[in-house]
Amino acid sequence: MKNTVWWIVAVLLTLISVIYQRKTGPTYPLKYEIRLEGQTWSGKLLRSHSSTSDLAVRINFPKKMSARISWKEYPSDRAWKTIEMEREGAFLVGTIPRQPAAGKVHYYVEILSGDATIRLPDVIARFKGDVPAIVLIPHIILMFAGMLTSSKAGIDALRNNGNPGRLTVITFLLLVTGGLGFGCIVQYYAFGQPWTGWPVGYDLTDNKVAVALIAWLVPLGLHLSRKEPRYSVIVASVFTLLIFLIPHSLMGSEYNYSDSN
Image: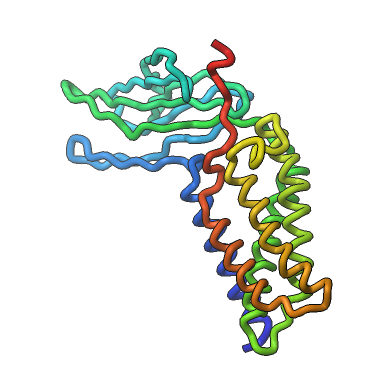
């Protein structure tokens, strides 16, 4: 097969990985669907929001219905606050006050229809600072490129006539620049700390970058010392694909509300 075909395969692997981790992550909007009065109603509940404004929860239900939203800071032992949602056109809207960067709220919506009360799925929403596009866009591009070259390097290592050495160097440099370089800047803007992975925290997004870099150190060292890196490239490539399938933002930064009581 031509080299172009293998690049296409690598692109497809990368896209599948990116889409999967985004859609399964804890900040991706939570979909709901309920059956009410012979009709099906569906929508999305936000699980991520800017710390510069209040979180407006919107649900689309008939005008004759009402709803309320209950929320509290998470994790905390603070009391629940409940407010009636207000009608704005076709939507019922409830507003949760903005929280500090990395602050989370636990909220749920109850639909009131006659004597019936229907509770939508519980949601944990996290607030984050706004990240400038000049930082966020390069971070996304470099990480995507690093995942792409990682997949292609692994494919080349499996081919009899493949030469994964050059892509090993490129992959390592992309992960360092996109993950450690721009990644730490993104983290600082979003949550006020440049690094929240090991050994200072448990942020899996940061830890994934660290583990991927460690995995690529072996084939990089072999290549630079002019030794055959083929098998170590396969291991590093597969390992990178697997760890980047872990949902994005899982076990991410979390504001400590006990310090603000």
